Every structure is written in C-alpha cells, then in structure tokens.
Length: 350
Image (cartoon, rainbow, N blue to C red; front, side, top):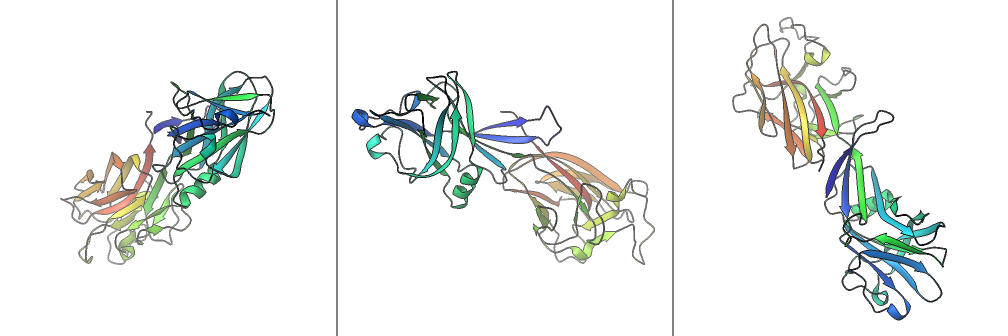
C-alpha cells in the first residue's frame, strides 16, 4: 500500500492523504474457441464485443487494510483503444471474489451483479482513466466484504478493442485509490458553558465518546467534569489568576486530584498514523503541580511551575497504532492539569 501527500497548487486546500491498493488478481477471459483458456498471466487485459467473440476483464482488490474516514474511492486503469473513437467500459460488481487469475476462464467466470459506473476510453494513446466507486466500496466494507471483485466489459463500438495494463506489467497496473483530508483537531479544556477560541472544540470533562458539534470522538476514562475549571471566573476561595497569553490558557482540566478516585486518561479517536501534537499543561491560579504528561507514553510536558511561569508546554511527534491518541499522567506528575492541545497528522511520502 503506497501513501502519498497531495497539495493543491490552485486554491488553498487541506492536505490529502492518498492510499493506493494495487490489484491482487486480474485477468481477461474470452468466449468462443477460447472459452476454456486462461489468460491470467498476460501483461495486458483485453475488452471486446464482436459477433465472433467477446472478451472481458476481471479485477480483484483486497481492501482489508483500508483505514476509516476516507472520503473518496476511485478505480484507476491505464489503457487505450485500438481505434481513435470513444469506447465505453461498463464496470460491474460480481457475485463472488473467489476466482483466481491463474485459473479463471470464460466458462467459469463470476456472474455479473450490478453496474457501478462507466469509463469512456477516447484514444489510441495509453492514459489513466478513473471511476468514482466510493458508494460501492463503502457498502462492501460495511457488509464486511473487503475483497472487491469487478468485471469490465465494452458496452459499444463492437469493432474496437480496449487494452488495459495488467498488474503483471512493469508499471501502471489497475489500482483502487482512497483519499481523505489529513486529520487535525484543536481542543481546549473549559466548562461547557464557555465559548471556545476560534478553531477549537471544548472538552468539559465528559467520558470518551462522540462530542456534540465537533464530528470527533474524544473524552476521558472517567468523568472529570467537576474538575474542569475556568480561571477567568475564579471560585470564591481561589487566588486571583495570572494573566494568560490568551483565553486558551485560562481553562483547566485536572488529570489527577486528591478528590479523584483514580487518575484520568484523555483520548481522541484518530486514524492510525503519525501526528505532531502540541500540549499545554498549567493553571493560571495555582503553581502547586509537578507537570509530567505523556503522549502515547512519551513524556511531552515536563516541568515545575512557579509564580512567573504557570504553564509548561511541549510538542511531540508520536505514532498511533490503536486508533486513539492517548494523553496520560507521567511517572513524576502531581496535580497534572491540561489547558489545551493541538493535533496535526503528518503524511510521509513513500
């Protein structure tokens, strides 16, 4: 599976993560005198409709490793026609994906089910053609059927043949490409009645789960809502807060507190991958902590506040493999408190 980062060069847009899944099996089959012959090892797939013989192509892709959150799925084939006139390829689902390229023939090819879409080939020079199959793939994955089997056949122009590069060729074999925007989120820890800074979502101490108006799943291992404070509005016995650089620094969520039965862990659901995270721990009203906060088990915010330095900040690049970015107490932490964090996925060219 290849991963690439694509940036728009026209209008500004969010970076996109693109995953490529090459065909695991492909073959063409022919009717007539070749109905019992296997063509699975050839570097070129053929499509033709004629009075004497018909040839169609079969593609199979394993999407078991596709990640959640994709927005767009495209089938891509590299091909051309033998005549300079438009030819339409119909792309259909098949009843089974159990066929093998090394054995399939016209006699035992899988039955077609429904037409997913069509591709128009329009020239004798080989180029990439693609078809949006997002709805079909999402339905397959929802039904726990990650092995995608497709049949390609020529819909018109019976005197033309279409040639498509097979995965046995040196390059440009059939592929399915999924893409999604890179994940990013900014979370500030404040009571729920507050208004978040622009671009941030409020965490007010609720248990992990879908959070209203955010589109994200995040939260705590235990409910800490009574331990989330707004230092802009100090409680009766609190000292006057220090002035923070901006409103993000004035919220406080305790990760551990003498009145807590157990220390708390904060998490957010993310696609597996690499992330750069900036984390701020602190309290505008108190310097009674030893800050030791881990991201994915890696110490990130580490320090002791005082009267002139109330916040400890840290940035870390971490890799998530279990679908959740985890913020937890470090070994030295006492009275750990979070103010806000910023998360940005990193895409690596491969």
